[in-house]
Image 1 (cartoon, rainbow, N blue to C red):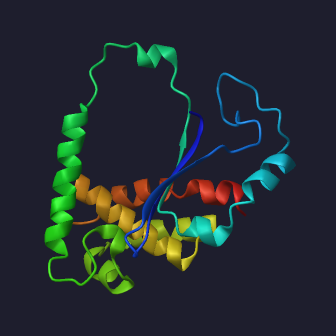
Image 2 (image 1 turned 120 degrees about the horizontal axis):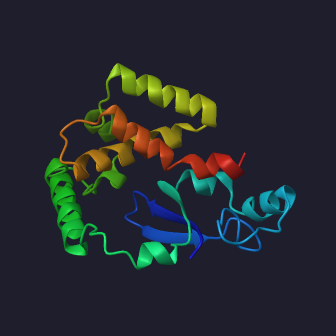
Length: 182
């Protein structure tokens, strides 16, 4: 399926996934089919999702259609069980981190106070994040979301600290909101 996938995680422990096309015809950014929509049509279509709602979504990624050649390749990929083990390990690390915290069991549920405690970043990462926020016009809420996602990326890599590569990857997951929702 072509389109965007959004993962929502909020303090109320609500987790939902949302998929949407980026234009009325559904072929925007499709490498094999031409989108017939004008920029104004795309802007109108996308603007139906409010900025404040989009601001509460942690991860925005464009999911292009998979080419047949990629589906039929024999190149080994990471198995589902390996991915599951990595995710389970990261979740266990989060449960241990927040042991004793009321109503917090994972990074997505961190309060601003916990974000400041568990997402400490160095000066280079701060500068990177500051440039991204200024260039993309991101909100304070987006700042915290980027830090939470960065902490999760670090957890998946079994890293004790959040590094600039984690910040950079998390910023990439915020690009769709500024591409269309300006």
